[in-house]
Image 1 (cartoon, rainbow, N blue to C red):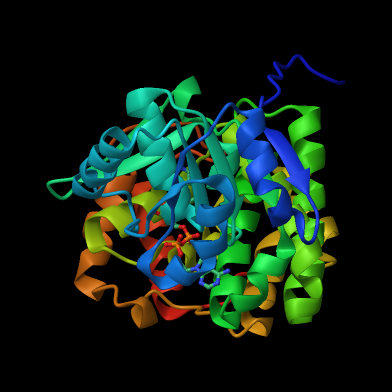
Image 2: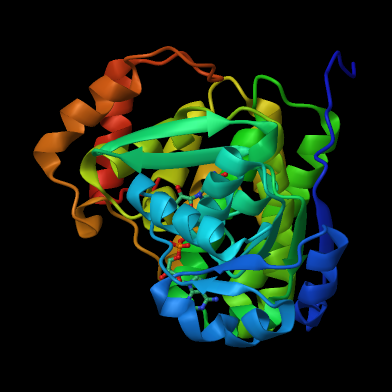
Length: 344
Ligand code: NAD
């Protein structure tokens, strides 16, 4: 039986292809942007020099992980002082996040040029931090108007970050396949996204094109349907214990998948098919291991005595998940992830 379901298409325009960064100025003009705030991180400041010149923009190389409100205020002051009429963010989820934070406050149009696989550019979700607390917002103003995917920009991606960022993308698709508000179109994108990334990531630079295609699909899934236990756990571990974003997703994913195997047989079969593995959870663990990605929470700096608190927070507010939230079983999941035990 098919349905019932609800499907809402995302309005973001996507331009995909090697060398397409050369069309950034034209894409900005298409959005009516004559003077963009060109956003990136300090680490990628050199990558935007040409863009600033070509678009007539103003550079802001101060984006930071988890979108601190103080940085947003600084960038907003520059938008006002320089008369910027849009944003152009180049980078990973941190740069994209700052463009979204500005758009949420001003409704200025956004052009994003992603250089990691995080997928934020395809969602209307913004996570911001102020005074140590993380607030998540969802609003149409946050959704970027246009995205340029150019795999040439991934040439500088350190291999370790390419691996964890790719696993981060796969996590969106895994949870999309058993989402409470899932639908057949999103499931097609999710399975194809996992397949594309699982095949491309072990290829290193030769796989960047295909991995970026997979990341786009996985980001679209993230923007379209509700995430569950895996994203909740990563949010808790990142927010409460300050663990790094992509690495935490990589370590937790096989274990959250193993937890949800009960109650989502169809999703698990599709994930295993996309990975070419016997089981979904085991296949995800093997993929991460083959990429020499981190496999334990311990190596990410998680204190073992914090696992109880993480389990408490993960079950404190109910949210949809294919298997009922059981505090004891989630505590065991975290223990398995702490030690890096391979799930079946
Ligand atoms: P990131 O953007 O913080 O990037 C990590 C580091 O790698 C940065 O220093 C960055 O400049 C650098 N980098 C990125 N691409 C590079 C490249 N091609 N070459 C060289 N260096 C490069 O990390 P991320 O994992 O992409 O994003 C994580 C952030 O995004 C988190 O704050 C997370 O909460 C957010 N996020 C939000 C959403 C959403 O929908 N709102 C989705 C995914 C992630």
